[in-house]
Image (cartoon, rainbow, N blue to C red; front, top):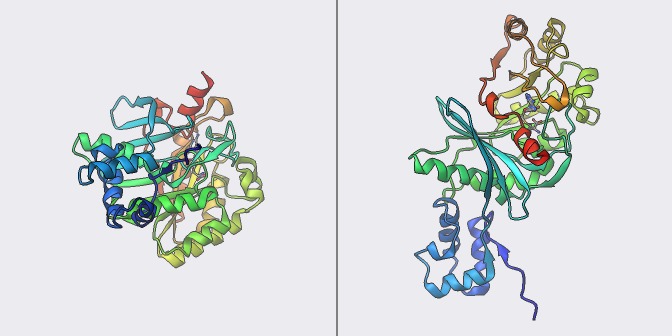
Length: 350
Ligand code: SAH
């Protein structure tokens, strides 16, 4: 006799869980109870679900699985503020998840794909190409892994940045499931405003996201002020050139009322000159936007360098002179392979 495959519960909404329980004869309200065990309480064994009878727990164990992550590596910055984890799923595929303890709260940076297909020239995540998309449950599992660690210190997660490995909008449905799940009261009850999603600029999906009615913060990776340079750094620019990306950003800002952040990674001698700053200012003047300057985390395989501090401050000042809203990304964890994909790349290449 072939035993039917068990269904994975982790990543289902309470209503979906209730539906999945029907054939076992469990009451619909059990859906929410189980979701609370999984998400709110971090339980990974049916036997710990003490408000269920023993025979119900046996039935559940025979029909369902609960995904568990295993930690393959961890690095902690010397100042203790940044911790980076390499977390593996049951198929042994692994992604990076980062905890940043900032003065305004604890922020978790999560991955949405194993590897990445975008091919940006300065990024380590894309070095081995795309292995696969993560499911909504696998994205959520990274956050809850960190949540359990923080609980032990009587701390909690205050914000989430979807800025780890992968292009989130290339895995749209799974990322949306994750965002809606984490917002549920039976999960972390996190407000949409404390979630930031960063995209390389997939225009149709930015437009779709604007129409979802969930006011998350959107960051768009720009990295260059003209198409010629942007195509060199980000191949996706051939598909969605700069002007289309900025038009989609403006539409997002208009519909959601939320300011867009344009990310600009500064690379020595490539995009950090005064001419680039002026061109960037022209491009973004008058938009509901801010610019986040990120001095590149050098990736040895890429041979790209960080600009001198004086070049970074000159670039920042030129934008400020044009009355643009500029922030310089605070350096966190540069001593622990904190650039996207670096830890995974290192461990896999060993
Ligand atoms: N795919 C998404 C998320 C990527 S990671 C996106 O493209 O936005 C978040 C940001 O880090 C992006 O702006 C990305 O371009 C940038 N980034 C990637 N590698 C970097 C590096 N080595 N140094 C600095 N920023 C980097």
